[in-house]
Amino acid sequence: MVNIRVITPDDLGYDVGKLADVLSKEIPARQLLIIFCNCSIEYQGRSRSILPEGDRIVIVKTNHSVIIHRPEGYSPVNWQPESTKISFHVEERDGAKKLLMISIRESPREYLWIWMSKVYSIVIVEGMEDRAHFSMYVSENEVKDILERHPEIIEEGLEILSREYRTRVGIIDFIARDRLGRLVAIEVKDEKASMDAAKQLHRYVKQLEKEAGNVRGILVAPSLTTKASEYLERHGLEKVLYDPQKFMEIYLNEVRKERDQGFARKERKLTEFFQ
Amino acid sequence: MVNIRVITPDDLGYDVGKLADVLSKEIPARQLLIIFCNCSIEYQGRSRSILPEGDRIVIVKTNHSVIIHRPEGYSPVNWQPESTKISFHVEERDGAKKLLMISIRESPREYLWIWMSKVYSIVIVEGMEDRAHFSMYVSENEVKDILERHPEIIEEGLEILSREYRTRVGIIDFIARDRLGRLVAIEVKDEKASMDAAKQLHRYVKQLEKEAGNVRGILVAPSLTTKASEYLERHGLEKVLYDPQKFMEIYLNEVRKERDQGFARKERKLTEFFQ
DNA sequence: TGGTCTATCTCGGCT
DNA sequence: AGCCGAGGTAGACCA
Ligand SMILES: [Mg+2]
Ligand SMILES: [Mg+2]
Image (cartoon, rainbow over all chains, first blue to last red; front, side, top):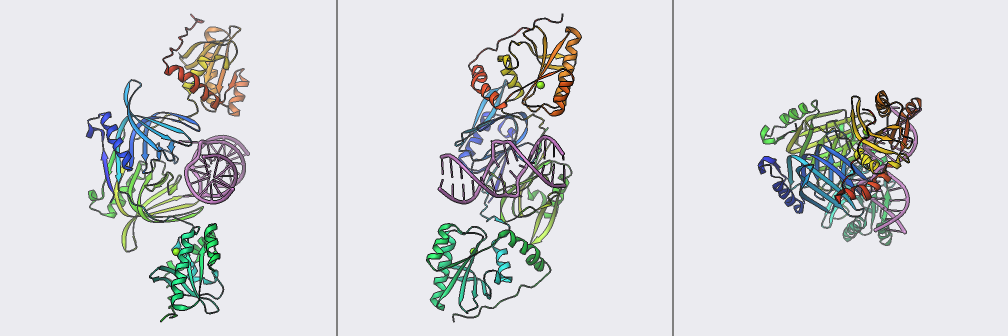
């Protein structure tokens, strides 16, 4: 569960050393860190930049990338895409004790120095969980909605018998029958299909063949890795490629429109191929 | 002064409607907003993306740009560079009341929908101030440090008499004497010089000429706008261009190194040209 | 690791 | 509002 801790400098008696200690402890824990502060910044690496004092927000993400935002603008004013080393120090500068955060990145070797003259607040976010799959243009479910309405995209004369059919070896995206009456297992992906997808399809085909003679297998995806493509060929499996951008248009202009208008999804019954 | 307010849902009795109200109020105030939440996101515009539920951080900056971060990775998963319209709503979705944030951008027309199923915390940052000037490669002060050591970069035989000389019309970056004994006013910029810079230099020259006969004026900058260049020409003023990247190298390899080694800056006395 | 190409690139400058 | 070029582009893909 997400737990958010807010630390203000008066919690620590405005002691810069204590602040550095608290922050240093969070670094190995790989928690997300947000520091609201007044700071000056210097960056040096592929280029160099200098930014005198101002109010900023420093974000340290769990992979130790660093993002510094000024109040205005969309882009961060300074950043570090993935720094291996982050450290906090107390340093005298311009006659005042400052909290110095250093972020060093290898390859290319780049340095980021943040001298904080005032720390307004620190937010530590623990336990964030985000395993969701990000889809561009269309999600796998949306692709399935399209294919259910337009099985001819996969192959002329194809009839969908079942969607998301549960078996002991996993959920088969579609079971269909081709125009020659043969059973077809279909695995759908919303991104480049890897070996995993090809093996998954193979598993489904073998499972169905236990009960229903010869079964075809089709992998539907925007593209395939070379290995996946070779695997399919080797095992007599097939592939159908689609253009995600075109699918997006079909989804927005047709499938979603109809669903929003209360169009009932045609329920298809699974003809019992296996008792 | 920076004031940070932290609101947790139990402050509002977990009332989604109240949350929407509180957030809606902050939008016209153009304050920086950070929402820690579990949400699903859809984006549609130049492209389209779909992201199911997960823990994320939604940042609304003062210019109403929107940045959404997952715990991992450097780049935001979804964003809106500068949205004109941000609104909060309560919407039923998947059988639950959700806080829906919509961000709409014109030109190109783009939409961002954030359905928040849980709001862990909201941080409102008021009164951030950041007027600092961001410099690439070298700051104006660093350029001055270099020129003070190497006046020959501007012109052979030039002798610096004064740095940051205060007058009634402003601070003159350098006053120098050329090899023919003429007085020179020098204005330094760390970025493309505009009309403002050209007029500034002209003002200084006219001011000095009140007391010391004919005075030259030189604008030192990486580049100039066409208008600035024409203005200089029209008023008999001069320009010297420099390569910021080369200046950066000089600064790092020489000027800063010497300063860090406790090299005392040579104090130059201003020969009294004007009583 | 290095080179090349893409991107909801963003951003600034100019027409 | 569109077009063009630069960027600490970052990130993905490929050799
Ligand atoms: Mg699938
Ligand atoms: Mg100046």
